[in-house]
Length: 350
Image 1 (cartoon, rainbow, N blue to C red):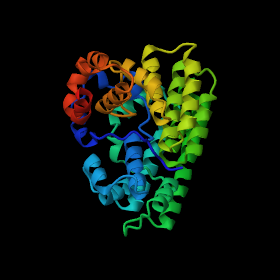
Image 2: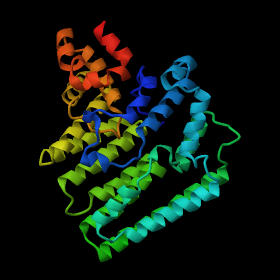
Image 3: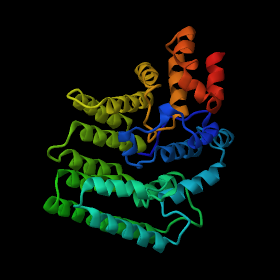
Image 4: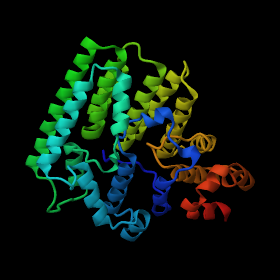
């Protein structure tokens, strides 16, 4: 199944400035900041657009207008991101990734708060880091007929697969070390590292299995269970399995019924709203989107102007114009991002 996040917007080319200055409502919350950077949903949207172009369902002109990039350039950028990147030689990328995870393994078993503080301090922009994902690369190479001279060879893809297995072995050693030398939080941290590496470099099945191992840990709090389910939902969405995404979120809803903080409750609603869009359940999506305008913090899913765009479009179908204007269009949060979504606001005011 092709990776996809089928929530494109006509104002995509206008969204780029948002990263420079997000409005307060779009700031990531504490639990959102700790969310895994993978799967990357912006990458999923690019993959979906390329799939639509290749299938003849999206014209080259429209695609260029949406992304601000020619399809052939977008394809090259996506394949570099899924593979080993372009800034360094292939062997150097492999070596650096191995050194990175060996360093992480040395930290496992230590005070998890200190480990997380160090990770946050050293955190870099993940938006350009290559995924090193051979299975996804092969799938896209076949699906999108990618035959560039810069494409990774089959031998290189096999090298990536072997490398990822070695990294997973290193991370598994970290889990063992944490169990022997530390406590439950350190074991959780080490086990989560495996799940997140699988979400980055593996298949949907391998990632979900790794997250199930996280959820099977004893003494797991409601909050941590919710975090695991939300990351599983993103894995399902990235790979285009929207029904399974909905099933995962239904399990999360049952868990949060027994507790959970307001931040995670609001984040779950944001996930549910986009899940409903993906399975064409627009009325429940519209209500959740409307309710989340002032509390949205799931920047790992989409940027705030994009979320507002979904809220406006879905509520156009169900709210009276006067209610739409009062509850959304004239809202202070919406007015702050109005310049980022001019086409949608013009439609709403027509």
